[in-house]
View 1 (cartoon, helix red, strand yellow):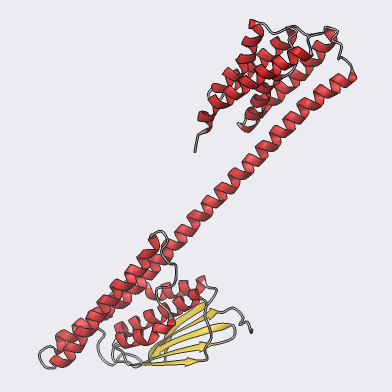
View 2 (view 1 turned 90 degrees about the horizontal axis):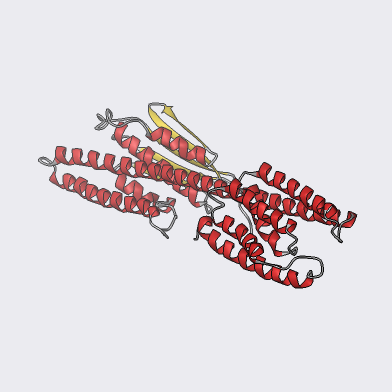
Length: 371
């Protein structure tokens, strides 16, 4: 895209051509009462376009020179017409580049000088109509310049708002990716740790059970690599933005957890992708916590599909053997689950329940439509 400063020479060339051609046409039409063009007149016709070239660097001095050239051209008796193009360009640029007072002062001075010139030199067109016509032309030029400024500022504001929204969405996407990575890593690494500890404990006395634990580790490590790849793919252009996991994979999740899990569903209905992903991650994190802090405990996972909300309830009855990872971790699992629920307008309550622990999330759902 060509910069504005790079466009100035082309605009100056176009302005010069139009000023000369229009002035030559005006010379023929006004030959009865205006002076013919001479070298001095052509020099004045080129002064304004030359100022356009360097106007961006010296806005006020170049505008003064361009208007001075117009005043000398008119007071020299040369024909009206093309000479006014340069000052119009200058007025638009002054207004759009935060030099509005200078633009209005030059417009007022020009109006006064043109009226004084017409009356002091007894021009045949002088009179009330001439004064109103000059005033209207200058006023309309300034109004058009102000409207162009307002439109430009509005476009710039919309662009800034769009950029800010883009930055906000990027920030939210990074937060979502971080949460996804946390859930994927926390669940699978905890599972791998627990199964590795189990395998080491059973290696000598119960090698077949140790083999099962090692097979679970292999599956979990493959799963974590696949899910991390799915999450990180959102960084690539054109990558799908669909959830990396859904409730259709709950049975697989339960099987890999190595826990005694009872999975029940009450009702069924289509779910928005965001709700399905959040529900899956909440169950995943809850199973991770159960494996870490309540090993040996049976876990109940219940999904209740209501007309207005999905209830996800995960509960255990307490540990039956020492917890392998009870002293590990940063404790971000429950806050992360609460953030997921809150992001969808839902709630999550987690706390002791009898001798065990229970997590209950309520995620709002859109009203079902019947066809």
